[in-house]
Length: 147
Image (cartoon, rainbow, N blue to C red; front, side, top):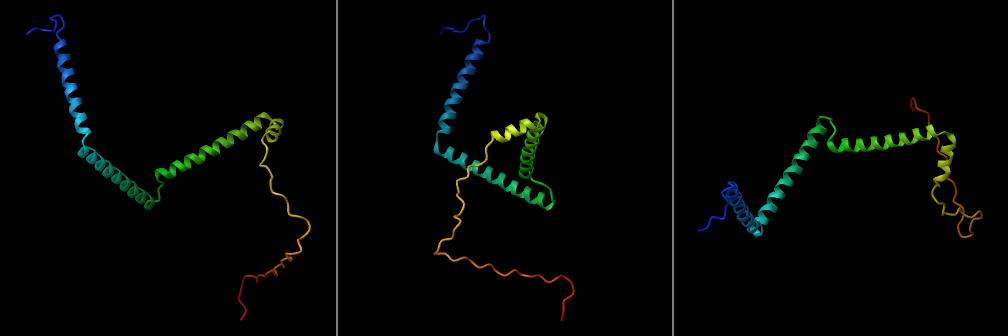
């Protein structure tokens, strides 16, 4: 038997043993994970975890609602609204700092929506008679009721 390890490198044998151990462990893990029972077990475990997480979230939401406190989702929505308000205020501040001529130029640069609907014709069609107006309803003043 020949010794393939150098006497000058005392860690060579340790590196070789570690590499062989990693290789055999990797092969075993790949075979195990490729099996159908392992997949089914992992699927069941993930479903149980997600179900428990959803139940805990629902429980916490009900508990916070009972205490009249906001949930995480409420705070996220509020943060998004505050960000939009902040952005809008920043645009207004930039427009004010730029002066009135820049505000007028930006108003001209951003055209409004296209108007594609045509106004109704001035003359009524002979087939549709005018619709009479309903009589105006009068309200009695609040106070004592008369007998």
